[in-house]
Length: 433
Image (cartoon, rainbow, N blue to C red; front, top):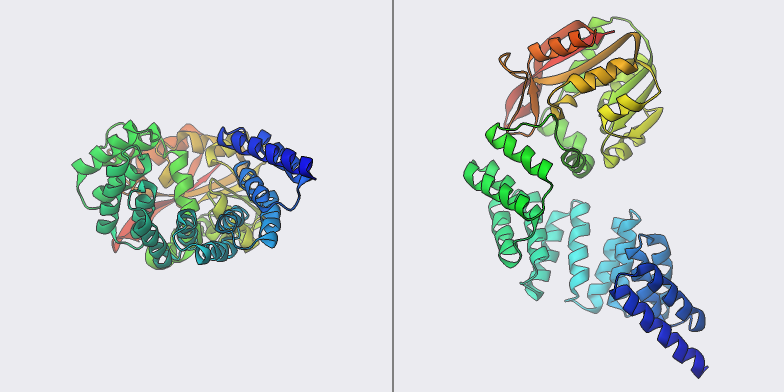
């Protein structure tokens, strides 16, 4: 028995050393070997759970953490790790209870306060998240990441001036936080402080922010070096964050009617037509798919945001959903459609040549491509607005359609949504092959 204990202890310490050196697979093996000799050692189970979380094995981590807590429930670290595992398993609501159990044991346990705040933000419970971060900062006011998260939470509560102060505190402690500079730049931009915004974006670039993303933000400020499309990371992040509130905010706050007007224009251009297969580009949560469903025998959807697709799947509208960039999907798919729709999708693309050319490839003869774009003056092809959305001219739409042998069957100008209570006009276009 003593030999087993000593060998188990040796293996445990080897596992700790391996974990600290980021040799995670080795650490997992050492902890497992230690547990084979002493299966009821709670500290080994907790360390194994932590390593499995770092190896992205949350279900396996949860099993050993539950074993550890069954042996000794008075372990704040185990409860915190359990919460992290539950978040990874998309059980954020259950995770909150685990973080709170950790804090009941140790009210100042910093990892639990941080993860509790982040989880509550993900659940859109921003006032409770703010309380968690304020508790954390009361324990450790020198935590730059905590100040950053505090600022993010204040932004979510539309307290932008207060958020900016928190970001300043974070950057004073650690200036090498690119996302903090980006968020600070966004606040300056929203307040009309263009020079400050530009400086913040350049600091973000200097500290490792994605160059394409910074160039995109700077182009929206200055109009120089406008990229052909929004960076994938920007679009993906925007809609992943937006997914839970998308329909309510878009329809009720922004008074978005683009999906309805696009389908109305389509029906006027092709009265009574029943389509065989429809593809909803940038399908989002499925607002447009619902309207396409009565017009087509089947509807597929494609979107860059996984969380948007999760919402779309719940509608039960789509035969098939694909996680992909719309242009790349059109370029590579072997499927063919007689209807392709893109409601408020090309606002994240500048030059439309690639996407319309790829759509032509996928359209069957006689097929229809319908889409909406925000209106730009006819002396430009497209512009990137300070809303970080592209607007396109009728001239550009007509030229691209002609280049790809598509006929303009309809083009109507109507309001699509509101911005600051002002209507935003769009072109609703129907092209036929």
